[in-house]
Amino acid sequence: MDQIETIENEIEEQEDTLITEGGKVTFEASEEECPIRLDKYLCQKLDISRTRAADFLDQKRVTVNGKIMKASYKIQVHDQIDVDVPPLDKMEVLPEKMDLDIVYEDHDVIVINKPKGMVVHPAPGHYSQTLVNGLLEHCDDLSGINGVKRPGIVHRIDKDTSGLLVVAKNDQAHESLAKQLADKTCKRTYLAIVHHPFSHKIGTVNAPIGRDEKNRQKMAVTAKNSRDAVTHFTVLQNFKDYAYVECRLETGRTHQIRVHMAYIGHPVAGDEKYGPRKTIPANGQLLHAYQLEFEHPTTHEHMVFNAKLEPKFQEVLDELKQEEE
Image 1 (cartoon, helix red, strand yellow):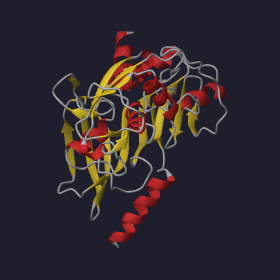
Image 2: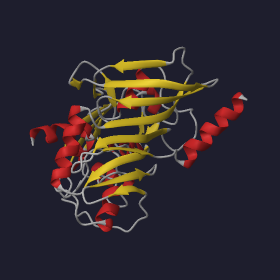
Image 3: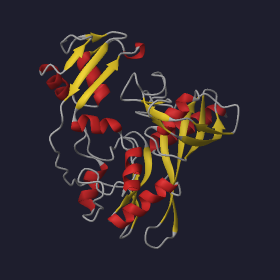
Image 4: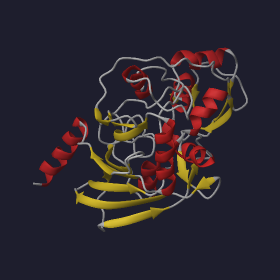
């Protein structure tokens, strides 16, 4: 069980735990973020609603440079914002009917092609319309290893990343898939459009990832409180200002591809968290989990699944190719 817990911690968003269980968090406003209203800043940093941000302010849980401020206060560069986040009440995760793109399903696993914009499991700010809500409506035999909030979830992909993930329908399947992730035999391959063309065809980023000390809602390449992270990439096509790349995960750290690509000077297009604000308007990063490989937990068959690019990604890619003609 320890190995399963390790792989789950590895791919779990750390801020989910902070905001669910409560705790103190500190931010320092950067030049790129300013000026911005205090309440809006809290919404962005903590991924909470405007109403919940207002509650924090009314309860005097937020200080700016040690002082209580109104919601309308405009954050300035280098302001220190301290938030005493209260724990959430326990959430009841309810089944919700939705049109899931199920690529494969049997008694042990479900392979889902998750659309861009869908959150994998309930978390602060996202209590419904998550993949878990849809799965609970679709079937009632998900594994219970991760508890009521994340039944069956073995690994996850970010809200604005589209593509494939596998869900376990029983504990035996969950244990097998988690072990494959830990042993690096479960292979996940992504496609991305990134800023700036490359001068070389292939590469590997081997750089540890941990929490960004200046912004707790971001990850960063750092030697402090970090874990090893390795991403292999192949340049599929260069364009004038962008490149189309394939990324293969050797490890599964939070935001790994987004952090690594930004670290080497090629941030994922559309990713305003780790890249420039002026980027391709795509409502989030142009990153797609297009291939998933694993050994079936029961039959031990080698299974490979592919998912075509989501419409907006394909549209942007086609436009870039046309510009090159």
